[in-house]
Image (cartoon, rainbow over all chains, first blue to last red; front, side, top):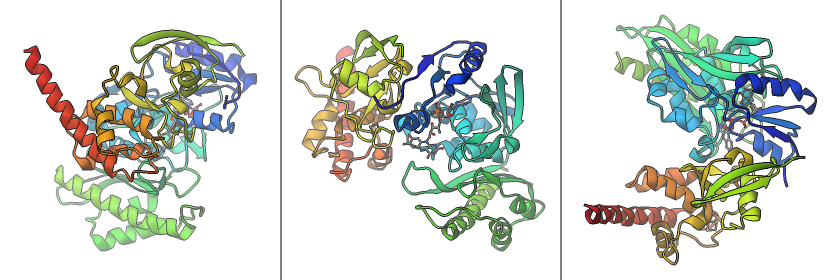
Length: 290
Length: 167
Ligand SMILES: Cc1cc2nc3c(=O)[nH]c(=O)nc-3n(C[C@H](O)[C@H](O)[C@H](O)COP(=O)(O)OP(=O)(O)OC[C@H]3O[C@@H](n4cnc5c(N)ncnc54)[C@H](O)[C@@H]3O)c2cc1C
Ligand code: FES
Ligand code: FES
């Protein structure tokens, strides 16, 4: 038996799930979503929670809702379900494009949207998407419900604004027409990103950038916004040279930690070329949709 | 630690059993149900040899607690052959030498079942991309790709023949 022993409950009501987390606080409880990050950690005994609250049967956590101005994805929606959802494709094509880079289909058949965001791996794709799209995370706890903007949600590697007795219930993604792009370098197909770039922007009829949101994964303890690049692009009609200098403004302040996948310098170089590729692709798409 | 009663439908047969929550689905299949066709490799979701179908979709049985599969319909490699008659994919793996040591094969076959159930006529390129989820250290994947495309053809003509008979 690989994982350490634990007790388990599979409630059907959100309030019961929260009560269980509170009641078993001494056992260092965790919620179990798709298990695709948590079970490997438990198999290696890197995580040894004494109590698991399985969310898969909790009512109301597995819906996808598209309204005029946002896409609301339940935390327990499986990654493959979101990937195949017409509503998700219409409401947040950036998310759907990013999902194709999250592990492999058999992992996405179990892994959830909420699990990936709550896990907050600094190399994961979905946190960068949440940050680029200014998503709002809804958290439910003993004190009720609160909404946390993406900019305040990711706190550090594997660390979020969620309290130990809070459950992420949904991710709200504003609908923003324009052009998107998700590009990354991974060592193997389906691997975590070494560097990933999420771009969401819009242009007017003259080709002037009216809005730009860009986030990176893999180059810091959390996903980060390329604010300097965004500011340099907005209000301009970008060409190859101005894109290069807009990218340089972000790249100059990056200092990613080097590891077996690449030195700090290599990752900075990757960030430079993937930012450029992502911006060019998003601009092409934005122009062709006008 | 307490045990929990779960019900699984494995290869069409319903079984109720009592398991510790920490027991992985792959261990329940192998140890409790004696279905040792499903292999264990890396035990953290990377290699794919433990792949089974849950409600028609492929999952890693090494990163799934059996309690999470309570009520689910599970298919394993043992469910593919009908008596002495091999599944077209098994037949094609044999014909095209889609296996050498065979360690990856149970998971690879179940992944390929899903691929063909979702797309009965995939291109070789699409097969290559989709089987990237499962590692094989022997074949180099070329013969597996050939086998999947060959099986797809057999299954399509079988499906056509089936419709003709039925109509
Ligand atoms: C081989 C392999 C390759 C992978 N490759 C990638 C990759 O390339 N990119 C990538 O991003 N991920 C990758 N993953 C991880 C995968 O995407 C996971 O599905 C995801 O990180 C976690 O989602 P989950 O639903 O499986 O959550 P779980 O594993 O169940 O949970 C993960 C953590 O989040 C917490 N949690 C889950 N849901 C909630 C919630 N609703 N509220 C509060 N806390 C919650 C859990 O308590 C746990 O601490 C890979 C995994 C494997 C096994
Ligand atoms: S044993 Fe399950 S993926 Fe390797
Ligand atoms: S046949 Fe040996 S690992 Fe695939």
